[in-house]
Amino acid sequence: MVRPELNRRMVRYRTAGIMTLRTASRPLDDPMNNEHVALLRKGAATWNKWRREKPDIRPDLHGASLRGADLHAANLRGANLSGAKLNGAKLNGANLLGADLRRATLVGTNLTRADLTGCRVYGVSAWGLKLKKTKQQNLIITNEDEPEVAVDNIEVAQFIYLMLHNEKIRSQAARRCMHAPYPVEISFSVSSPPPRRNREDTPAAPTPDRGY
Image 1 (cartoon, rainbow, N blue to C red):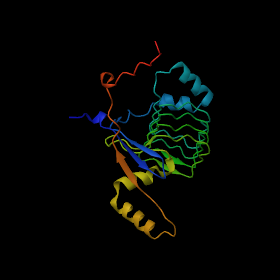
Image 2 (image 1 turned 135 degrees about the vertical axis):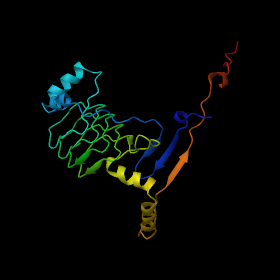
Image 3 (image 1 turned 180 degrees about the horizontal axis):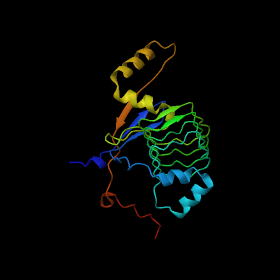
Image 4 (image 1 turned 135 degrees about the horizontal axis):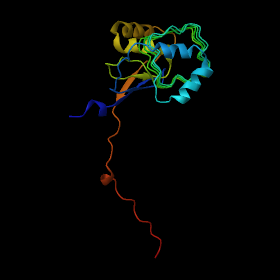
């Protein structure tokens, strides 16, 4: 039997980039670390210095209230921001690579030039974001107990999740497309990656004829 972690598929959504299905999952961490929150509120310079000195510590900001906080250029790579309140926060230029934003609230948040690559965004509330030149690859929209699905746009993450899991919304979307004044295409395709070849199965390259 093929192990779940080896049974990977690709799903494409034409208006939202490529979505990758995987089965890995990570549980929510323990309640937030108040020392981490207090340190972050001192500003990006102090925070980034601490991150350089403690590279092995994963920041735990779970559920933190950071409304309107100035986190410009903060190094939040891999941070646990699940459930955090980030309304109006200034995260322009911040490094959020691989951060956990599940159930976080981002209303009017400035993410200009921020890096959101690989963030977990299941249940995120995202409205009125500033996303000029923001990196948004592989945003994981599913929960930890579901096959992993990723999209490339945080503003459509909720819509894609509902399209995948809510039959009524899919039906309504299809009905709207049928009556649109111009052709609209919404399609999904699932395909398995090509099997890996063992080294011993790879034929040896022919020896070139050098004429001697």
